[in-house]
Amino acid sequence: MILQKGASPIDTNRQKLWLASASPRRLDLLAQIGIKPEHVGPADIDETPKSAETPRELARRLALEKAAAVLTHIPENEDWVILAADTVVAQGRRILPKAETQETAKACLKLLSGRAHRVFSGVCLIYKGKSMLRVADTRVVMKRLSAEEITTYLDSQEWRGKAGGYAIQGRADAFVKSLNGSYSNVVGLPLYETSSLLAGIGFKGGQNEHND
Ligand SMILES: Cc1cn([C@H]2C[C@H](O)[C@@H](COP(=O)(O)OP(=O)(O)OP(=O)(O)O)O2)c(=O)[nH]c1=O
Image 1 (cartoon, rainbow, N blue to C red):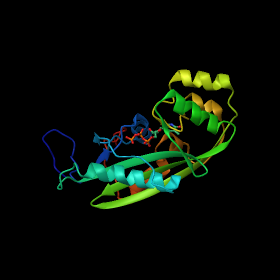
Image 2: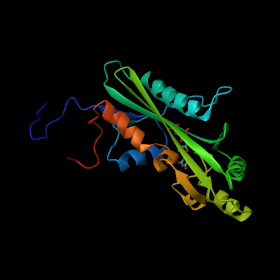
Image 3: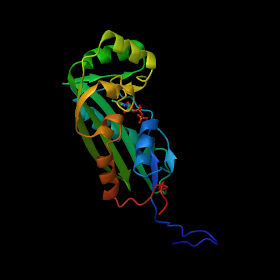
């Protein structure tokens, strides 16, 4: 411990958390469990699925690639815990895209309407050269959506940048008849898997939101 004059003890062993994400939802979900990363810096990777890649495999691979991409920007001697995630919405083996246009969002909502689908999030932690991965899987049953419900939802713009063209943390929760599995996984960061990965490396770091 280093005791600076007049300051509280600085734990030099405290790991620093780098959240490799541009998703505000992931930052909010970490805050929900009292963790504030020292740095937020997204990875810009190609998220195109490989041929015959399953949704689970895609979520896992992209989470690893996002974390690994950030590693190349960090000086060797820095002791960072890198956290990345990737969320994939799927119907059977069909992977739904992240909605960037109204047309894409509309097509997703029509596919999801009145049926079950699954949401996979890969979570990757890289620390001291070791990568650790988990994949969470949630089954979501969506009500049948009327043309008016789809139009109203599209007008909300909530779908923009969301896998599968919907945000369960928003208005779209009104469409969800049932959910089997982690809710935070659907939003984009499964908190059970994330916190168990962090516990696995004895993570004490992160500017804890609720100071001890
Ligand atoms: C299904 C669903 C997805 N999403 C969001 C979570 C993610 O931000 C996004 C899935 O795309 P991702 O590629 O996983 O994440 P991202 O591109 O937003 O951010 P980054 O890669 O920098 O981490 O969809 C919701 O916010 N709510 C939902 O209900």
